[in-house]
Image (cartoon, rainbow, N blue to C red; front, side):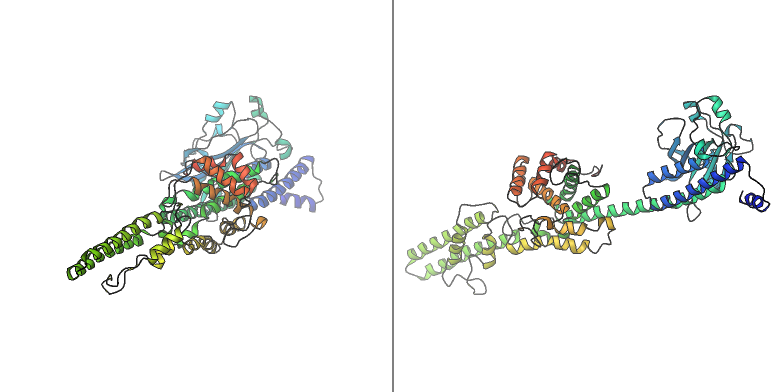
Length: 550
């Protein structure tokens, strides 16, 4: 066509109205081709890409209908998946389905041969071609497929990844105008005979160009989807690594992530309050989900015995202490027996022995009470001081001749714990898990939309009044996402199944404690209000295998 235009221009020959219309239409087609090229570069969602590709192809060619099919493996065999379709003249929905990839169908032939087919009437195919048109759709909807342009989709390696089928061009060759023809609807049998034309040959290279751009865009989208799948699998494998260190908290990260997303969705529909008008996009929700899943990752660097510490003394240390006291009791018995055999004051020695035995027995009972992580009415400091001051005769020694201590300095430190089972040093080690999380997560080359995940994980134990850790941040210096995680993390820690160091609390008490933390200025009161109003806490009881963002 370009050559014809050049010849006429050189010969100063006038163009007729039909030729002018074709030139105008060709100009608009080129503009559409440029436009789809720009859009395909930026679009990453596969479904949006499919709609964009087919809509543009129909607009350029004046096609009434079209379908896109993609090649995929199923049960070890290559198949064509019917991915997207649109028919201007019929308002109907289409379901995705698989069909065999073979030469018996028009689309299968194009996909296997990698060649374009431009068919004037699919009902009048020559007998010598291997493919046939299947009339199922036509019979079901009273449609009449006639002209068809089928183009293969090839990736950079010239591998066929699918086909585009364009059906029933409505563009009149005598007055070609795709914009006008796209307004034509085919309703009656006469319409299919008088308003449907063969696809113009000039559309073949244009559609091949569209197909090439579309193939690259679809391949990029597929690779991006695969990368996302791999990244998601990495995150969940990381969660598995966390929870394998502490089986008692299994499911915690998943539940926190689930509640965090639900709370963010609650914020997005707030009509009033400080967060009114704030909206979390799908990407922002995914970022928050990943932060919830990874918020405790730093725990993999910490000795799991600390997390499993059910009482103030580790089982090993408790057993050693009890063995030492049993040894002390046995040493007292043997020592006084030997003295009694040599002394004339057997009765006095017997009384001394009875007192010392009672001291050891009382110490064992008292240690069992103090070793529990629950509160006690006893004056802990006074009782421990009394145990440390207990004295024994010089002949009560171990095998090395050393006096046997009733309670060591380290044991006393553990038993002095006022709340829970951890010493200050152990608690600091656990608090450092947020720093370890941050140090690990900052080493990951996050995409721009997920770049703040390490900071959310680091700050999820910060409190609005500055009493949190690791940095003692206050108020708005704590990111909203970290404040969301704080609310969800505290609720789940309270409501979770029995752990070595605590019992699970009933839902009503968990809600009360979280509200008290908000009233005390530690948690974001508005977030807690939304958390309660939308019953976000119920999400921690949902099956953890279901999709969080679904």
